[in-house]
Image (cartoon, rainbow, N blue to C red):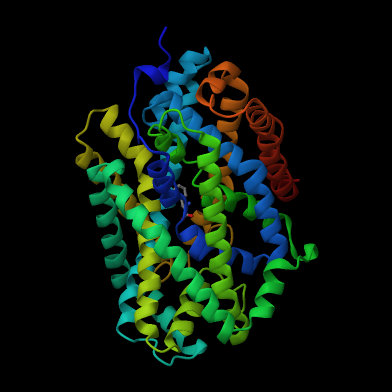
Length: 455
Ligand code: PHE
């Protein structure tokens, strides 16, 4: 009998293409914008250590599980989980993982597109020299003035979504490959240059202490939850994206090796972004815990005071925007591929539909910075509540379901069939960690953060 993956075959032929596309999906605003502000809010090194442990023991095994699932089903996340559950002889209700992922992805994209829009806007602001010889205070004031006015935020967010729509309408294989391949090396070089520059003009020692000398007393339960949530967010898991990308995994290649390259690249970019941002933060006395605006105040200040800084700064925000595009595509792919494969909608129409929904949902985030500033949900603005709810609850919950499904419901031989290139020990190690550490780990963090609130 033919296995599922033999009957439906599509995919990249080279590991490098798959790695480039997946790196594009994982490296994005999460690394460049969110990692540093979360580390800043949660006390630095202790948060970073917990985050790295979560990456290694929870998020990475789940990422491999998602790709294995995608590689088995070779379809959109919903159909994939449905087919694989039939093959495993378990309830097709498990396809809920796919539904859950598609919806969570759209919710994330609704606010992700707003931040990507900020980044687009900052390309033109820096290029125009708006921050030349600025002070930290002025950079902060300019950022606040930008947030106060919804019109231009809406336009930039719209432009971002239009670009995502065009890329995804063409299909991720063609649309993303080239972009990711050019962008990632450039991003590394730019970040290294920025980190070197900011180590010279900023307080590098304070930044290194903050990022690498842990003080665990500064880490709360909520901080641990945020570290776990961010591990999922940064590796793009829990929203079905890696199931969708797994459908294109090349045959006869080691999935674990490809994932390792992606995880290392993703982690390095986050740490480099931190090393670029924190020296400026500390030399300027900006509060590291200032929140989502951190990158948009510290970086323009840094470039604004550098010779030709307006060009370099524009280039930096161009990189951030391009990285956001390749991630935005990954957020949209699950829902788009379902509409086009299952309902047989023409792919551009499916993409347009999804983008329209995201744009509408995104209005709430845009207005939460100005017109609807007064509305609060559990003490947070609509934007922060969406960010908290998706990253800290939906993504880990989606990842948990995937870990249970792949680790406990799929047959071991089937998994071995997909991971046949890896050695026996490596396979068993992954399988064991997925079953006994990743899945229970998410539960423990959930229970310890929420029981305390509820009991
Ligand atoms: N990992 C992406 C980032 O760091 C965000 C993302 C989350 C993309 C979930 C796809 C799915 O920016």
